[in-house]
Image 1 (tube, rainbow, N blue to C red):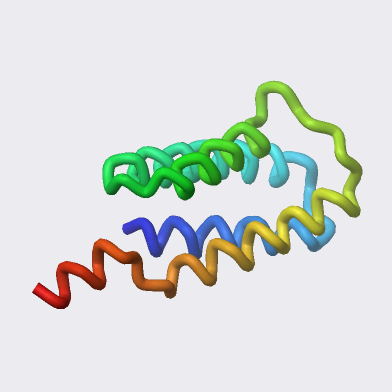
Image 2 (cartoon, one colour; image 1 turned 120 degrees about the horizontal axis):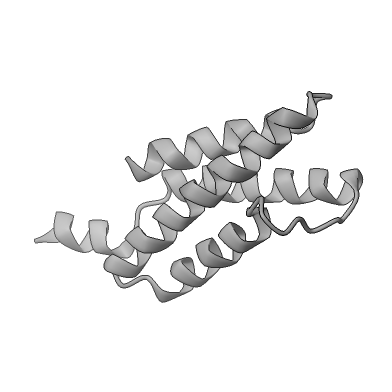
Length: 103
């Protein structure tokens, strides 16, 4: 499920590079908040401290309630970096998964 959330968020973020109606960006911010909060919660349950911190920061950055005005160009850069990171992390095996496969 986490892999699907990461891929879905990546697609939403990359679609932000296109010229979309403003409502789409608001929708993405809400979906990103929920998705990153869930990923932070799951990372915390699995004991991944750094991932928990990263996903929490991303949830705060993308939250739709108190908008952070960075300009379209900077947001596009952030969207690409975060989407790339999510795609890479979704295909990377975690240490816990590797340890379970060995046992």
